[in-house]
Amino acid sequence: MTVLVTGGAGYIGTHTCVLLLEAGFSVVVADNFSNSRVEAVNRVERITGKKIMLYECSLLNEAAVGRIFDENEIDAVVHFAGLKAVGESVEKPLSYYHNNITGTVVLCKAMAEHGVKRIVFSSSATVYGSAERMPLTEEMPLSAANPYGTTKLIIEMLLRDLYRADGGWSVSILRYFNPVGAHESGLIGEDPLGRPNNIMPCITRNAVSGLDPDGTPEVLMVFGADYPTKDGTGVRDYIHVLDLAEGHLNALNLVSDRKGVFVHNLGSGTGYSVLEILHAFEKVNGVKIRYEIAGRRKGDVAVCYADTTRARVELGWSAKRTLEDMCCDAWNWQRKNPKGYC
Figure 1: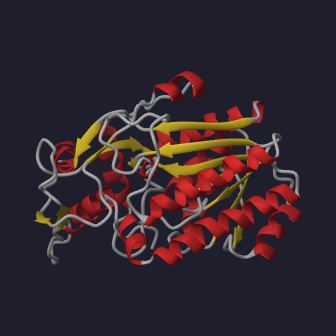
Figure 2: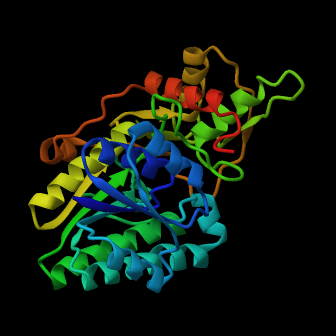
Figure 3: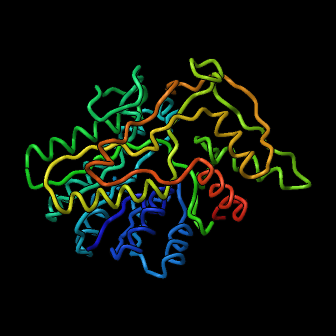
């Protein structure tokens, strides 16, 4: 079975590609490298000892996307590609709407033209908006607190409409929470270009800067300490990236067996505050993190964590790795790759 992984050179994409290859799938990757590097794909091949067919292209390029399907017998798609920074989406909404939504339309059009109707879509817990009740379940009302979340919500609607128009589609929508950690080899991990938006690469880069005897350790900015939470910092559901990748394999098996639209939360089911994550990292890895409190970021919510019952029942999936595993593996990656894939 051949799987097209859009955004397959990215953080979650590379880890999913590893598991796909190890499970016996053939993998084709499409990535425009706007927030990823070719070296990440090379390292996936190094981990697995298997080759990946790689296309450097944007999903906005209709001809290039069509060529991927013309040149390969694609059986299913795992769709990660998209812009994903909440704060940036508030500042550049048009870029997010155009890239994420139009790119998905182009992809689905090519799929339909080539008779490929199985897709696993990388959605997000942001589609729940500023929900007041926790944990979040798949049946809860949907909204969005920022343009990034709105693009995910619109794409979910698009995929539902595809199935309504043609019952031959099999669609898995995975609403996942905050991926952290890295592959145990330390060969692949989270390496955002420019300034990170997510908490763990901010922490690991802070920690690795402290290893330079001639340098000055960076200061980690904690955005918001006045939320209605246990310590005033935002609470999130953090999940190990390999647990998340395993969820995609289970979802791929589901859409291979059944027609319909299937929605599942992928998270640990536990909420941790920013300071809890920071102090857990310090304790597990024996490093000290310098941090300062800053104001809230636009578009952020106070608390967000998952109810994962449906994924456990319908996908046979649950997160297995601990917060300590996440912190240890993230540091193993950054310590071995202080400048990422450079």
